[in-house]
Each structure stands twice: as C-alpha cells, then as structure tokens.
Image 1 (cartoon, rainbow over the protein chains, first blue to last red):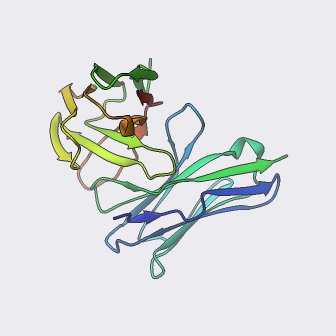
Image 2: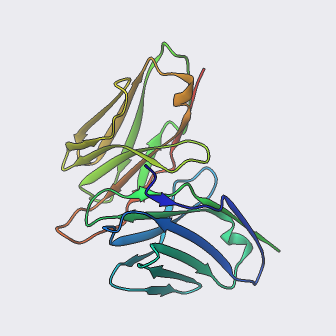
Amino acid sequence: DQQVKQNSPSLSVQEGRISILNCDYTNSMFDYFLWYKKYPAEGPTFLISISSIKDKNEDGRFTVFLNKSAKHLSLHIVPSQPGDSAVYFCAASEGNNDMRFGAGTRLTVKP
Amino acid sequence: ETGVTQTPRHLVMGMTNKKSLKCEQHLGHNAMYWYKQSAKKPLELMFVYNFKEQTENNSVPSRFSPECPNSSHLFLHLHTLQPEDSALYLCASTLLAGATYNEQFFGPGTRLTVL
C-alpha cells in the first residue's frame, strides 16, 4: 500500500524557470511532510519540510505548499539552476512515526 | 568523520555468501534505520532501532538480520540472498525527542548486487 505517491518519474525545465514537483498522499493522519534531494552515489539529503498546521513554507529558492483537503503537496524551485538536477523524494509521517517515501521524481535543469 | 557513513559502498555477492553492511553515525542520534531502494520504487523501510531496541521489522525476510550494538552503529547481516535483493541499501539516523519531529540523515548507501 503506497501511501505517498509521486506520479511524475521525471521533469525537465530550463534554467531560470520554475520547477514544480508534486506529491500526493492517502493517509489523512500524516502531519509532517518533507522533501529530500538525492544526487547519484549519495544518500538523500533533507531539503525542506512543512507541518500540517501550515500551508506554505519557504526557504530561499525552495517553497513547499500543502493542500490538506486534496492531500497534495508540491515543491517549487525558482529560479531553477543546473545544480538542482537530482532526484527529489517526498516523505510523510504521522507524529513521530516512521516516514513513508514516494518513488521520487528526477529533475533535470537544462542550461 | 562526521554525519552518517556506510561501508562498503559497493558489494557484489553470490547467493551462498554471507556478508555484512555497516552503518555509523556521529551525530548523537538515538534512532537508526535501514531502507531498501530498488529502481523506480519508493524507499522501503526495513528495520527501525530506537535507543538500540528494534521497534519495527516490516516483514523483511529472515535472510536479512539487523544488529545494533550501540546507538552509533548499525549492521545488516546478509546470507543466502536472492538476485531480487539487489538494490541500494540506505542507513539513516535521527534524534527522537518527545513529540518533536526531526528529519532523518542518510548515509551514502551500499549498492548491493547479488549474482
């Protein structure tokens, strides 16, 4: 039972444009959401998070939006840079319980 | 060395071999995890150790055997694996502190190939 889904396996954008990565979840009890970024030959690294009491969290070029009614969150990167090219994983947890991950979206930012 | 380290980074083994994966964290965390990442699939949580006690085993076959001798070290012992066990095995750690959620820190992973 895949509770966190990233339906787009890949995304390609031009440098300087906005990248929007999407994530859907099925468990309405999830109250904490995270995005991780993974480069080849490295482990995932934490990027940004949001709790269910908020609908937006911003950190520099990265903004995460949460729509609880739709059970949907998205990561916006603007402006996108070639160094942002990586696989992005969405994750969710209920309280302090274990995280559930999506399958990842490979982002390619073209110069 | 800081962060979460994993050794070896790459491992090729036959189905009859016995090998172990090692994970070490230098972050003062009290929980450690083993994940399996297969191609185009979500990270699958395998084992969880909180304060050195195993708290979760997500129906992982017995050919995978975890060991957590202390809060800084985590092992995954492998024996009689199958080719479908070939994957990237990731270790992660976090600090569990009451109701506060902290993100997990991942190691670089061990790329395992079972022949």
